[in-house]
Picture 1 (cartoon, rainbow, N blue to C red):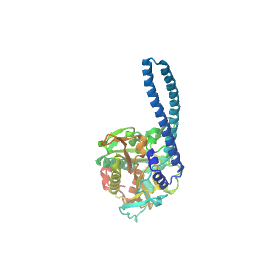
Picture 2 (picture 1 turned 135 degrees about the horizontal axis):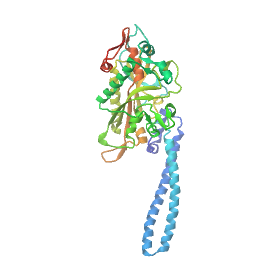
Picture 3 (picture 1 turned 45 degrees about the vertical axis):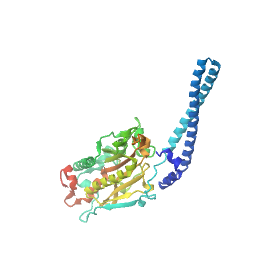
Picture 4 (picture 1 turned 180 degrees about the vertical axis):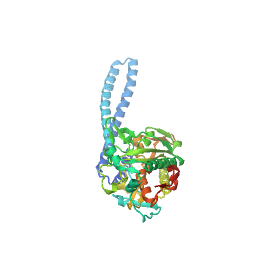
Length: 423
């Protein structure tokens, strides 16, 4: 949620930022400013009355002590009248604060100054790339055919048990999933991240805190009986670990990592681009989250990007890093870098990670704060990234490392998988 002072101090900055994100309901800016002015005016009136009540209450005691009962009774009547007015103002203040809050949460985060303008993924900016395109002239099978050939994934069995988009990993496929998860977690832990094993369901407050609500309510699986939501990413429970917390400045940065399954409805997805593992409703992902000092959060972002880049490189995959344009960014993000790996069998780029800085957008909702060197309470900046999401990584490992003899396992992964070849 955007801090209200931004609207008071720099309306034009808010307006330009929302335009870059292609947000259409720009009239909400004037509504927010008007509601804030009304709220401040009512608050000032309420404060004035409260001060008058306090002053009169003291005077009543003094008048009674002097035996000036008539004047004391007159002041009592005035106090009663003021209290009734304060009650009405308090109710009006509560209504204004609720309307202001409910309007503020409809606005996305403002983009960082480096975010390019644009509306579609085609307008994203390629930052850098690496790795080589594999030569698949000997054979060129997509991962769903390789999964069937080597009995790694049973898509039809998942369809039978649950429905489309819930694959069942079997044999060496299940083993490869477990190897990837363990490798990714260990890689993050070695870089100073503390591992957590969070719940797979969250309450409404947690989903609201990271910006999934009200923006992505239709994309989450909702357990209506209890009001819980199946998590779309570990970012949600992990960032909420420090909700309503005041950290000491020396505790920053807080670095956390977690493995969880992720659940996404992906409503409206169809066609050849979502075949196999390209888009599923349940998938595994290892996440990294940082809570950083505002002055150092963009250093932390670059550190996280470099961290994920080395991880992708260790898997021997061709990749590129994109800086997302305003129209392709998430609701909560201020700056996002996407990692894509190249599927030589499908001849297309597949997104495998997003690394984002949310600045104070999430921490303002969750009230995650720290005390600065002067003892003043400030909001932290929150960041997160996939490190990594498994489905498309696994798909590209199968496709790009296929040979006539089998599928080569990247050297960094072999100690976790236990062998160098799937055959």
